[in-house]
Image (cartoon, rainbow, N blue to C red; front, side):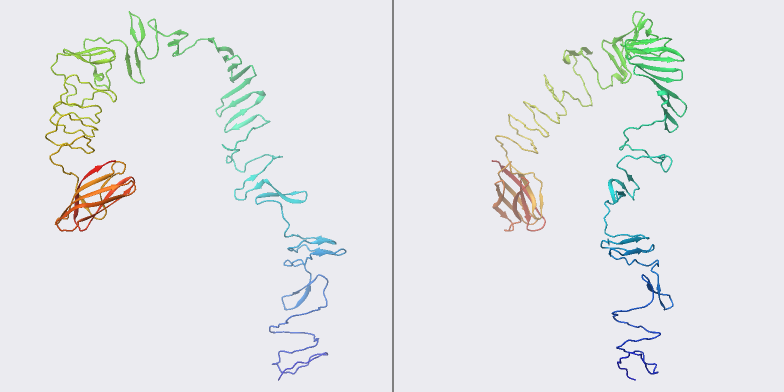
Amino acid sequence: MALRPFNSVAGITVGNDPQTTVILANGDITTTNLTANGVSNLGNIGNVIITGGSNGQIIQTDGLGNLIFADSTGSNSAAPMPSYIPVGESYLVPSNFQGLFTVPIEIDGELQVDGILAEVGTPINSESGQIIFDDNGELTGNAGFSFDQTSGNLSVPGSGLFTGNLLPSANVTYDLGSSTQRWKDLYLANNTIYLGNSTISGANGNIELTNSGGGTFTVAGNSTVSTLENGNSSVSINANANITVSVTGTSNVVVFSPNAVSVTGNVVTTGIKTDNYYYANGQPLTVAGKPARSITQIQFNNSNEFGASANLTFNSSTNLLTVTGNISANNANLGNAATANYLFATEGSLTLANGVIAVSGTTGGIFSSTLTDLNIGLVANIVMGSSTGNVTVQGNLKSNGGVTGTTLTGTLTTNAQPNVTSVGTLANLTVSGNINTGNITVTNTVDAVNIKVTDLFSKRTSINITTNTVIDTFPIAEFRSAKYTMRAGDGFDYQALEVLLVHNNINSIITVYGSLSTSNTDLVIFTTDISAGNVNVYATAVGPGTNLNLMGTYVPD
């Protein structure tokens, strides 16, 4: 059965065909019940008028498919708050309504709020962490009045007024101030400060110090005299610099004044030292009637009287015995003194058989001897002179083992010396005659006007040549040019060369101007450069197993 549009004013009449599910009406439809079992799309609704209900009510479902009118007081409701209330109108926000507003609300009429009205966009003049307070109706914060939520620290810029006690939340846990943040002054109106089990009290204008064992000191007095008391004993410090000790009710037992010490009773002491004397019971300490001197002086019998002298002392800290005079003895067993580090003599002499070792003023030595031999050192080394002084030998200096010196500054002169076997790093060696036989080995430079030799050959170590092998180097400031005589070989063929080199402090150049090769070809190729203030000469082998010997002649500017 086909469907077609129709207009109906009185109603809609359809057949009994159950397949008819859509009715298109261009007019009004009035019905008692309108039931839709499937999905119904009402489309765009221009105007819908529903009669019934009261002002402010909302349409909601009862959970059974029925729509009913209900008061707008549900917990999930949002306030239909207008942004403008004109004059003469009033608006009530219920207590369980909430709303967010992004524009200012203009109220010319009346607004009653039973719930909470929050207006989004109104600034609060505070930074993060600052505590907010009401400043004459405006919420604001202070830069010094803040709270750190992470650490729990509270910062207060001004003073705090408390009507109760200021107590920590835990016992023996927190400090008042720190080593770097200290309180300036502490004002207390009561009498006692508790330091562990000890106390500091301020009773009757005095300061009383009491430790955990019950020991007590009381500090009393005025601007003239201050007193430290313990029971019946006290020490008074007077403005005139006197110190007075009183004990068990007796005043002025001991008085220390700038001039003397006054003692009412007896003084028992193991010794009081003053002005190099020891005192006991007010008198100088004596040994057999002689007063003792300083603690380092040694007591001796002086005509049946004990005494001391500054010429004979002993220092117990350094174990040093000082004798400024002479020691007389038939036999002297020096013991450790003979093997000690030093033997001092300021004057006099030491006689060994017929030889005399004497000291006269600042000069000392062996001045006379009829001995044929004077052995010093035997198998040990003999060190003479000082780092700044000289050793003068008036006779002959004879050495069976040679003369060896780490540094010989001065001149070593010999009229007839067959061999100078080693001079180490000797700066200069002057030979007035000829060196006819033997060898001279010098690891540095030989500076001579004329050198006459029978043969001249190099003792440089042979160098194995690969690629750009350094065969010689010298400072650019020392020599301007060089001439090399070389021998190269690979075990089968050999080459003799003469090479010239010159530089201008920036670049160096090299050339081979003479060459003889058993293979008629070069065995090595040479290059040169300047780096780090030095001229470098390189050799590159043409074949494997090549080595090189060279002898250089250098010419400075």
